[in-house]
Image 1 (spheres, rainbow, N blue to C red):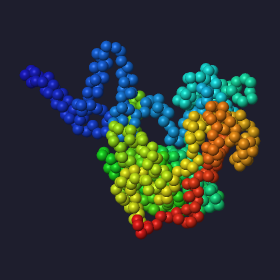
Image 2: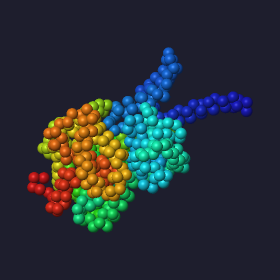
Image 3: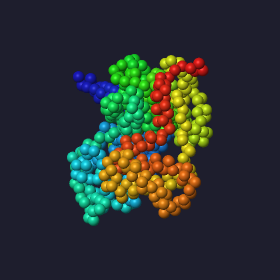
Length: 540
């Protein structure tokens, strides 16, 4: 008995060692997608940080070093993998359904926060805040001067639902500050800027981004247009840089018959996954035109690519940005996160429209749009480089991979009104400054006019463009009559539209700007000619 007991510690020790070896084997074998860094080379980073923290001559903020190193590491992968600090992650709610805040839109002028719009139904509207109010204190602490930034303002105004923020307000016509206690609440975020009728038959929807609510907003917009008797539809995706892929898929589904491929994704660790239409869309036969330009990216390209490859509608405008990479968020315990590219998405014909890039060198990538402009692609369809592999749509039309969606109908950028004078005043921010100040000084009178047409007529009667030129002159921009004459229509479009936005809302701005928009005009022409369904030509 005593003899056997002598071997018990040895047996236990051997068992423990064996268990550790087995455990280490399986831990290394099945680590999967964990963020743990396990190979020898990568461990040098951890070792370096430990050595610096332990041995360096001065005290070092290791956390700060890590924060600055994370973006550098991800930049070596591709142009769209990125790192968000904990603070940035809190602000990263642009695509969500809502956030908790007070319900205002603002701009910063001369180190002061000016409220430009009050969100309908939000906490600020309920307590009586108005567009044009200036925020001068937050929670009884002065809030003016160099401390005023966009991020700091968001930080102070946002907060947990049900909490209270006290604002000191300077209001036009009031001698003393006004004070408001505002209980923060859920503020809805919208992604559709406008939905209205372009004429008696053709409806128009401007989609600014693809958020959690975009599909629901689309259905609401379509229902509104249906009440107005629309028989054709323009979906405007210009300047829409994307968002949630699922929202684009849901939107495309409304326009496709059953069992049509919308998009598929595939990556090194992600098997191919197909997304197909379910046949329950309510607008499978309506004539459809999609507007794109060089800033239409990501989910916008999913939508446009699915419509084009299924020959469901006509793409009008200019070549899209060319982003075909899918990012997945990986959160850390401190609230920060990385957005890591894990797959590529492919249009129904099989093309990946991601434009070329070199890992770790995104200079050429960032300059791509400038180079497109320089070689004339914005003005001449023949200047579009289509060097990628050839694919075919459902009826056999040729389309190309390797860099964005090339439209079926090209519309050159209209630069006839762009002059050096316009570029100078726009570059100095004088247009937005003038529009804001004019709106602020004349808000009550303009609001009393009641509608956009009355406001525009009033602006013309007051010779507003001449007032603007004098304003620029006071800011040391020399008057140049010939160039002003060439740019006059552009000045009117931008200035009148901006004032409509300041006094009314974004939809009125879009409506006004679209009156002279050549791409919208081309879409109307295509609809009138009944050319909204692609056909296979002999040279395709």
